[in-house]
Length: 269
Length: 320
Image (tube, rainbow over all chains, first blue to last red; front, side, top):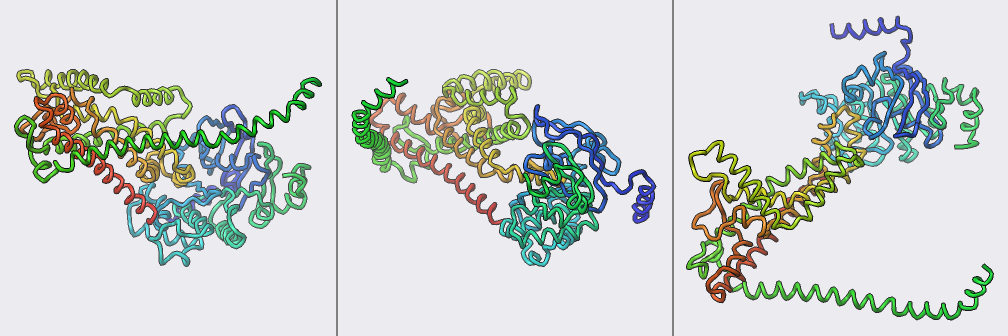
């Protein structure tokens, strides 16, 4: 029975009007105090695809990303208007608590931020705060998440070591494992490889390529080659506005807007 | 403009000369003064510590620290005062640390830093730190003993004499806790402020609630800072006489405090009593020196215990 429900749900969803979109953003405005940071953003995020957000520093792409899991609420004096739907449910009005949104929309940060705890406890953290107490289940999910984040082989013999003993690239993959452990449907990544060396970066990029089969991924990057390599769709932000979005190939080969072309050809930014 | 330029041009050599002259003195005089100031402090400290150690060392013995005073304090030991001081400090910490820590968490995590309410609380905390300690003593007498203690007596023990509405170790400890509260609040806030925002965000992004984040990430990370606050509170509180002289410290007691509403003897107050109330000051002098030395050693020891706990915690935090 348990297995039947998602199947039926998927069937029902495929009959709905926009079955291919995991998240839908409508008329999103965002303010830090009196300063408006986002202006009327409309964007669809397709399911099981990688969407890249590109644009120069300060264009609002990170702010937009953090709106998708209500992370901006942690900053005082911010205000948001418009709608963000997750499977058709408004994440700001139809969820009681931001933590309920965040268990479904996970996040990986720019700077790897493991807790000063053991490797095991880092991955188990999300399970524990969400009320999972079954020790065997936790052990099982921790291993599975580390395998998915391509870190298991490197850490399986030292799960009780401090996460801070890992290298920068390993720490970031640990943060990905930690985010995957709570079984999110969407994973937001805020420049996940910007502080890493080229080898670690390519590991993260390979990982994104694998994860897209099971997760909907939204990635912010200032590295346009990276956007071209890993994403299916690309959205270009400039001065708080969404200038253009579409299939990555088209954005990079035949941009419709002058601004987009100037940016991807390196004329500014 | 023209004339001004011309003037500076002609005066330049002499100005340059003056500047050179100043540069030579600028180094030596302030440096000399600074050295003198350091020497004054060092000399004073040496004289104070030296005279206490010289005067008190001979008095200290096993007898002295394990026996009560005898013969109107001209003989015997100071055990009840040592016991009372330690008990007082522990009760004070038990009262001050939770209140101070929760205040700091509230200020740091639940209020906007620039809001009027937060600023008012901060001003109040800072002013609390500036209130003379004798005022705390009078406040403790009026609020804890007369109002709270008296209130408890009126409701629960109307037929008896004062049970709680009299000087007692609990009221002295609470008064002292009020005095040391700002220290705990400020150092806890300092510790909370240094916790990286990224760690809290990581917890929230994993579906942790604000409360879970504070309990599982923020407080464990801030523990060494909180203990620093406790250490400073001990330093500030142990040895304060003014807040406890009206609220619980006794001139002389033949028994040790066993209940929260007992009075107690305390080292600082005992020193005050011996120095000012003794019929034969010369006879009590060695005991006085010894008591001062014990108080100093005890304060250092209480601090060391807290520092030891803190460094253990720091080590554990890095290893795990």
